[in-house]
Length: 328
Image 1: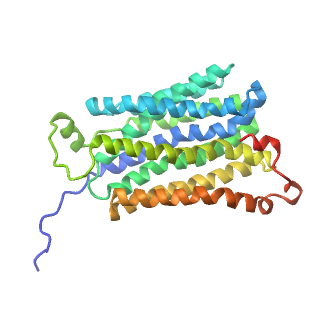
Image 2: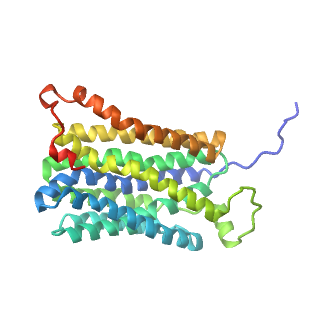
Image 3: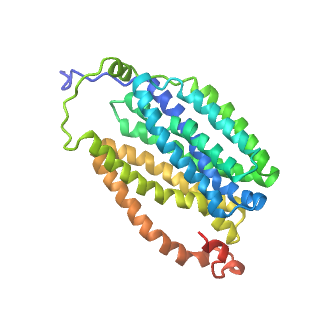
């Protein structure tokens, strides 16, 4: 019996899945720290007398520093690779978290989260996501979807664990415990980072590829960047303010972080499914489908919350939204 497809493409290197695990964990830690701002928000407001707007601005600082330095690290990754990115990020993330346990002013708070974003989050997200992509020619969408789901898993698990620690030990000890855990987890995993053979070959011996896509690279980057701004805006506001909103409404901190956990686990599932969908129908059509789903959710969510609020809360708490909630 003759094989209908005698010539098969070589399999992707098995080490690519090791890289999926590595970047999954590192991005989980990086994004977990961003999400945990929601559980530190009220304790820090109480401790220092900052407004909630001032405190939540720490998330904005991380985001902007990650964006600016992400471009820089991407350029460096193209020229020199990402071999040491994980080690630098592991030290930066754990060091920033430990220093946050000693903070005494809002400027220190902003500065330390700026460092976390610039030398932590920015180094383990986009450059290492690209690293993972170079390992796969078969089902790259699934591999990247699993990798990207790490950020959502981190935003589900890390805030929940921080909430448990906050109730037992307070915010300073929680920051110190977080720093120790981050170093213990991220440092050994960072040693596993490798470059794919195909990327090393392309970096050392660049070749001109035949382009069939109708848009230029700059146009693609521009439109994707604009799309990500709107996408992340829809994500960041609930991530930062959902836990304080629920605790203001009478839920316990454990209940509030559980709601955030469910939200982020569903996001992790969506990223995996979206990656797989990209393998089946193409990256651009799958992005359009997922964006349409998010847009519908954004319009639907506020109406659902308003209708459901009185059934979710205990009867004794089903009163008009307090002023402290309306500040959001």
